[in-house]
Image 1 (cartoon, rainbow, N blue to C red):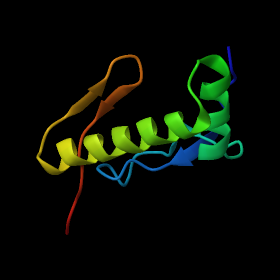
Image 2: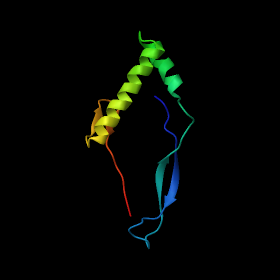
Image 3: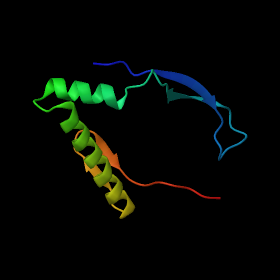
Length: 89
């Protein structure tokens, strides 16, 4: 199993300005995993070519985007759920 990199960050509670700061775990980036590397790994693990993988992933991204634009939540079984989120002042 891979390691998850994190740091402890001291933060103030924005709702309780007088409360003492607490420490929270914050995810830390550990490099990049490019689309090229992902295509190669999938092609090595399957019978698909890198071009096939590229077309499938690009189609997946397009279809997810379409669902989100239509106000839908998108579920990818073991990967997670995607939904639009935004804020304003």
